[in-house]
Length: 220
Length: 284
Ligand SMILES: Nc1ncnc2c1ncn2[C@@H]1O[C@H](COP(=O)(O)OP(=O)(O)OP(=O)(O)O)[C@@H](O)[C@H]1O
Ligand SMILES: [Mg+2]
Image (cartoon, rainbow over all chains, first blue to last red; front, side, top):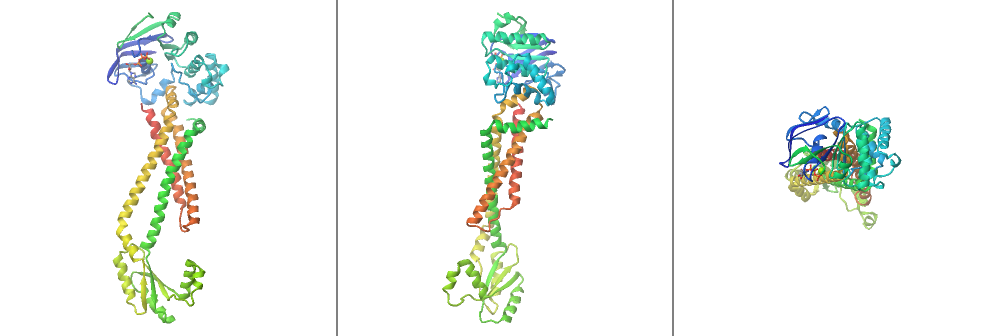
C-alpha cells in the first residue's frame, strides 16, 4: 500500500529525513509522533507527493515517486484523503458544498456528487448541519466536515496531520472514535499527533520521528 | 471537463467576492480607457496633422479685374504645374459666404461691399512634401501673370517638418509606456484577485483536481473581466467622444474599430494575466 525505501529528504538543503524505510499495509492505523519540527508533516507530504525525496523511493498505491508524472499526481491524490489541524474548509460555502467541491473539481457526474456527499456527511454524523456555513460550526464539527471531504473520494488511506490539535479533550476523543470507525470500514489511517493520552486511549502502531529517523515508538 | 461547473464557479467567484471583482473591473476599465484615450488622441492628432502636412492647400488670390475666360486659362496653367492636384475657382461671393459661415452674419453686415478677391483653392498632390518643394511650387504660381498673392501655412509646415520624426518617436514611446503600464496594472489586479483565492487553489490541488480544471475557472473569470472592462472602457470613450464632439470638436472621430480593439485587448490581457497568475500557484 505505502512503502518508503531508503528515503532522504532535504528542505532548503537541510536534511529533514535521512535514509528511512517504512511500510504501512492495507487498512492499518498508525500514529506518527515526534517533537515539533521532527518531520511528521514532511512524511505526510511525501505520501501525497507534495514533496519528493532527494534519495530513495516512495510507493503509494500503484504510483512511485521516482516515476510518477506531474499529470498523474491529481489521480494519486484522489486515492489519499488529507485532513489538517486547521480544517482548511472554504468559508464561503456550506458544509455540503465543501464536501461536494472535492467531487466537482474532479469532474464527477452531478448525480453521484449529491449521493456521495450525503453519504460522506452521514458517515461523520454531520447530515443535520449540511446547509450551515463552516463558521457556524464548532471546531469538532468543522473537523468532521473536513474528514467528510477527505473521504468523499473513497481513499484507501486517510492522512490526518494533528487533527485534534485545535480541539478540546472531549471532542478530540470523539474525533478519534470517528477515525477508528473509518479505519474499521477498511480505510488506513496515518495520524500525526502530540496527544499521547489519545494514543493510550486508542492504542495502535506508533512511529517515532526523531533526528531524521523513524523508529517504532511508544507514547511516553 | 464539466463546462457547467466551470462556468458556475467562474460566475460564483463574481458573486462571492463582489468588492474584489469591482476593484478588478474598475482597474481594468480605467487601464483600457487610458490606453484607448491615448490611441484616440494620437489617431485624431495624426489625422489633422496629415491633413495639414500631406494635403497641402494653397490659397491663390488673383487680380479681380480678370474676366471669366482668363480664370479658365489660369486654372489650366496652375493645374499644369506638376505637383498640383487640382485648382478650384472660388468667386468673391462664394468666398464671402464661407466667411459668413466662419465668422457670422453680423460681421458681414457692417461691410458695404465685398472686399474679398477672387481666388483659387489649389490642392497639392498628397504625400509628404518638404517645405522647399512646396515653396518652389508657390514661386511658380506667384510668377503667373494674374496672380496677386499665394497664402499657405508656411510656418506650420516648417515646424511640422522639423519635428516630424521626433513626434513619431515621442508618440510611439508614450504609447508603449501607456500600454505597458496598463498591462502591468491589469496583470497585477488579476494576480491579487487570484492570490486572495489561494485557499481554493490549495484545496483543489489537495483533493486531486487536474491543473486544467484548476486553471479553467480562473481563466474564464479573467477573460470575462477583461471583456467587461473592455466594453465599459469602450462605452466610456464613446460617451466622452460624443461629449467632446458636441462641445468643441465636431470633427473628432471615434472609430468602431478602435472600440472593438479595446474589447479584444481586454479579453487578451484578461486571458494572459489569469493564465500566468494561476500558473504560478500550480508550480510549487
Ligand atoms: N516550507 C518550509 N520551509 C522551510 N523549512 C521547512 C518547511 N517545511 C518544513 N520545514 C522544516 O522541515 C523540518 C520538518 O518540518 P515538519 O513540518 O515536517 O515537522 P513536524 O514534525 O510536522 O512538526 P510539527 O509537530 O510542528 O508539525 C522542520 O525543521 C522545518 O523547519
Ligand atoms: Mg507538522
